[in-house]
Every structure is written in C-alpha cells, then in structure tokens.
Length: 138
Image (tube, rainbow, N blue to C red):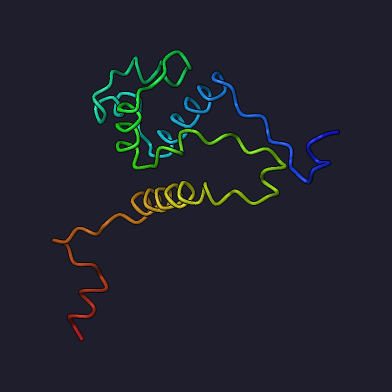
C-alpha cells in the first residue's frame, strides 16, 4: 500500500543542507548581478568583507540571520528570494514564474534606463535646440 491509496499526495523530497547552501549561493550571486553590484560594492553596502561574500557565493560559508538581513536590505529584496530553487520544466509548467516577476521588472527597468542614458542623453540645458530656436521665431 502506498500514500496514493489513501488519496494523499506523496510529499516531494525536501532539499538537504548542501542543496540549501547552493540555493543561497546561486541566488545571492543572481540578485547581486541583477542589481549590477560587485562583491566589493556589496561588501561596502553591508559591512561584510569581500572575501566573506565570495565565500558565501562559493558555498564555503553560511550566513546568520543578521547577515541575511543585511544582504536583503542591500539588494532590496525579500529573504525568501535567497532560497528559491531552480525551476525544473515540470515546475515551470505549473506556473510559479510569478516569483520571478519582480526580478524581471527590475532588470527590464535597468536595461531601459541604461539604453536611454546611452542613446538618449539629456540635452545641455544651457544650449537651445534647433526646435527651441524655431519655436521662439514664430
């Protein structure tokens, strides 16, 4: 007899300690890159050493709740986002992509802002554009 005989779903296997450490490392790096922040910049923002941040991203060190709070504040995110597992094709078919919506919106806004700053620089306010000069003549 198995769990499904009683109408119960079989529980998914919970991730082990090493997998949780890999989740944190992968998501810290993902969120840091999403915000376009280097390890050095993140260390300045959090008061942690660059080596410690590197060790977290390489699964060599774990974090306390205080450290997690500092990383959360510096990267403008929520603590749960450090523990998101990778999406499998089966999970993606179920529609959990909503958890990535904020990341997508932030990245999209950054790309648009960078594009506008690169290709549409602000006009010098001391100079009048040809359109402004033509409007004054009318």
